[in-house]
Image 1 (cartoon, rainbow, N blue to C red):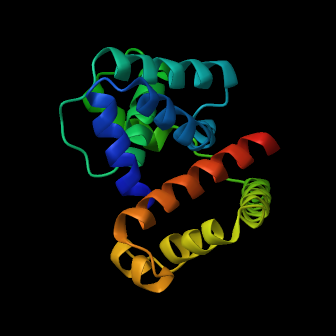
Image 2 (cartoon, rainbow, N blue to C red):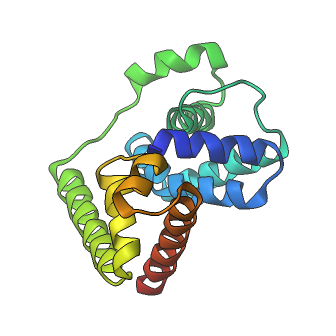
Length: 183
């Protein structure tokens, strides 16, 4: 399952009232939204408030519109929210025209910081995976790195389909626990 599919599953669960799925969406996308928003709005407090407002509004009245990408939906919603905040006299129809008026700042330092964060995250995940039992490491490798489905994994590991699913679930659960310990 790729990231977008996982997001869609979380989104659908959230729309059914699942608080944990909503929390997962918030945690998964906050950093991305903050990074993107900081390119549009130099005021940190305004940006943080806008992200909070966006998620509060989502919780209070989830969109019934089907979406193809949660990430794209949230980024667009934040952009409109920031534009409305920064130019309150504008109508929503005029928001697209604001893109030409607002500066979008990208610096070399942003790329360096992003690459360092990616390396640090990769290092943490790799360390956590290496701390897992061998069978859990193997199933993560087969499922995530080789993109095998459970049927294929059950053949490779000589286990039945349900055991493969359960083992992968346990591996991910253990991995999450290890990752939260290192943060």
